[in-house]
Image 1 (spheres, rainbow, N blue to C red):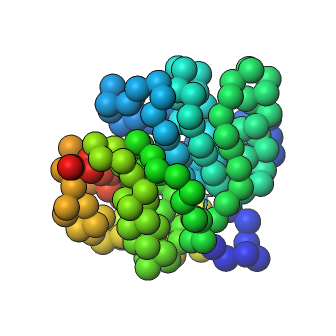
Image 2: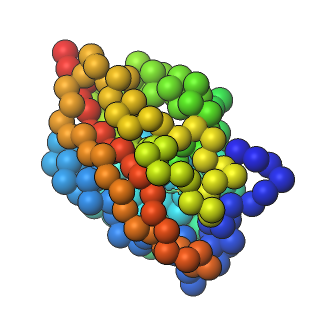
Image 3: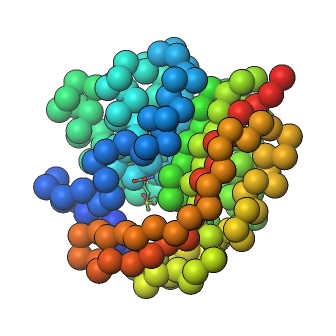
Length: 206
Ligand SMILES: C[S@@+](CC[C@H](N)C(=O)[O-])C[C@H]1O[C@@H](n2cnc3c(N)ncnc32)[C@H](O)[C@@H]1O
């Protein structure tokens, strides 16, 4: 990510009264949550303010890790957890240098991978796959270059995927769902705009 420019979400992460993206958990997470059990090891990559990790921890999942590059995002999530007496392991880390130290039953990442170079997100996914238990699942959402990056993210979106490209990385897994779509988005201080996105849900097969 360009270190001289600050993305819009950094300001929202510092504002207790505003939500950068959504306060609701991702619908795909809710759709596939039934594949987990309460002991499952789960990690949210580029969790931001952590609405997805927070949701799972609140549901009683007791092994939830979540990391983000943003210290403000992680601090906000930690404050929220403390206030609600919710336990999860939130920490700052960079996915381009992240070293897995355990295996997971679910690795999820929403709207983050395209903010690192393509070689880096591909390397990350390969490492995440190698640290996923048999029958474990990945839910990965990445923006594509089907339409140009909107102004709010253009300086940071250095790794937009080609449509369908992420599927190639899961050729040896069972694809439970793949979606290619364009959606309208709006954030505090940013006018409505479009993103092209791929979302994949894949399961490691024995
Ligand atoms: C659009 S936000 C999505 C946040 C969250 N996943 C959500 O769905 O609300 C993208 C997030 O990716 C994080 N990010 C960008 N580059 C990163 C990196 N190299 N390692 C970890 N997180 C990164 C940003 O700090 C930001 O919180």
